[in-house]
Amino acid sequence: MSLPVLLLLATVVLCVLFAGVYWLARRIDNYGIVDVAWSYAFAFVAVVYAALAAGWGVRRGLIAAMVGLWSIRLGTHLYQRVMGHHPEEDGRYQQLRKDWAANFGPRMFRFFQMQAVSVVLLALPFALAVVNPAPVLHPLEIAGVIVWLIALSGEALADAQLRAFKRDPANRGKVCNQGLWGLSRHPNYFFEWLVWVGYALFAAGSPWGWTGILSPAIILYLLLRVTGIPLTEEQAVRSKGEAYREYQRTTSAFVPWFRRTPRAG
Image 1 (cartoon, rainbow, N blue to C red):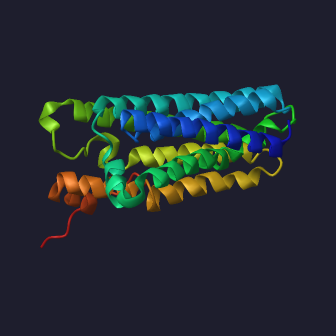
Image 2: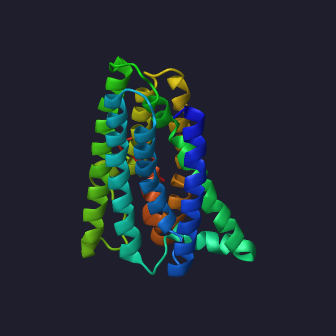
């Protein structure tokens, strides 16, 4: 199956699936479930691409495994977080209910459809790789696998550290600044972005693979300017106040780095 047909098929199928997710979110009255669906959708897309494309079988299997492992780990982590707090909804979506109150239903449906389209756009590196017939791995593909392994491990470690911190009742209402969280306020986001850098490197070993750089670029923009850090930090300041502002003054927002010493006075 050709690349354009793969992309069109994925767009149609995902828009239908995310319409179903929207219906489910309305039923359970928790729109945070879209994060779970978004994460799992990449495994679905990667497996479908690998099954339908005509590229080298080893490459198709490798990209399906890489995306599947990352997608299922992230999706399961988010599912446990969303359902663990249910019926309380993620603060970001509570805020959207307020911001979009006058026209909430239609706007949220469009938001869900945008999530479906974003999966197709971001999955471009997978599509570029699975149609490549070259029967040998390019050095850039090997580099992509190495970066992906480092990123996946870092993201899993950051999630585990935050989960352990929150599990301790003594930390209720406190800011997690231990482990990777002492080097970055959002190490999970940093390693999430690095996962996509790995996918882009992998795609760069295929014809037109350089266009795959769009995926980590989009992810970086979303994390830094739209739905990632801005909304998360707004919620954190509302819930933790001055403790989180102090954390902002001393700790890197994104790239893990040494802590800063606050200025006196």
